[in-house]
Length: 120
Image (cartoon, rainbow, N blue to C red; front, side):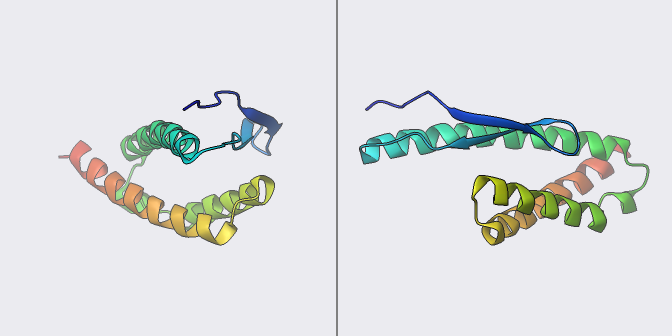
């Protein structure tokens, strides 16, 4: 079972002037290839989610009031950006929105706990 470690990356600069990567799936010939690549992507996603969580924990430290933890305008801004990225990468926008909303709710819940813990 071989996992093709070559990536098909393209980069562009978004309106925040930061590089964004888009990628296409490696070609697979067997289900073992598919599963190995899915496992590889899952490892990358876990690493990215851990990084995102670290930023959420920093936000809990920085935000001055508990009321600032949940920011509806920011939630909608994130969703708009995710949907725009989906159009670029060819990912289902509605699926992504459902996933991001669920993920953000968990991160917000975690941020509330961290915010409270930091001020005990």
